[in-house]
Length: 261
Ligand SMILES: Cc1cc2nc3c(=O)[nH]c(=O)nc-3n(C[C@H](O)[C@H](O)[C@H](O)COP(=O)(O)O)c2cc1C
Image (cartoon, rainbow, N blue to C red; front, side, top):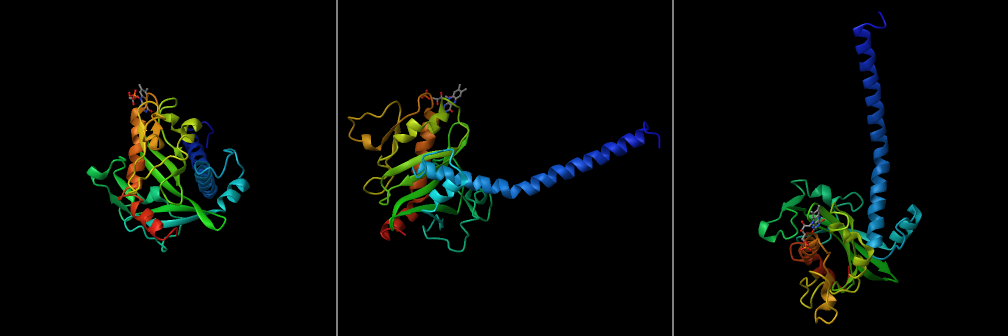
């Protein structure tokens, strides 16, 4: 066949397409396990950073794994607050489960203050064990900001009333406005704040402007993000949702009653 013929040109182009697509899909398939491991490592790192168990955001894999060795992961049924021993904590993915009709629940509009519409029936919770006792309970939380769903970790004291640390690991808010949820100075002020009242109902309040140190409720107030009231409200509502009866409320009640799991 003539090298310049239409038939030969199409045949060569088709073979090239097939070879390239095999190469690209082969690379995607073979790299998937590595990508998943990196994603899991990144989530562990962000959890540790939020809980103050890791200081260096550029920590190596070994440093992250070592710091994570004090963390015990459990899967719980959000409605009952009981541990779901039939679900493997290593493979459970609440974000995926929230999209699966068999594994999710629709949140009634009147209760959906976090603006997430659906949530998984189950969630992971993380217990930090130091010196033979539980020093922190870490909860994954998420809620709608202005542009995006923000995903973060909230670390609580063993009595569940006080914040030990808080931080988001994924969001799409505007850098310099809502994106300031990532600002280390803003995150620092959460540490030691009162998040649940004596009746164990959420009391944390992100105020517009700066929290007033002479206010009676200063220990439960957080500075609002300037020019980002919608994101600030989204953070507050997400925490109220996840700490309430429809979120981790039943689990936290059981946890307290058992004096820690
Ligand atoms: C380009 C652009 C990006 C914005 N990004 C955010 C944001 O990420 N979070 C937010 O709450 N408000 C954002 N805003 C502002 C909101 O539209 C709204 O004005 C603001 O939340 C009101 O907050 P304030 O009362 O503190 O000014 C953005 C506005 C513009 C024009």
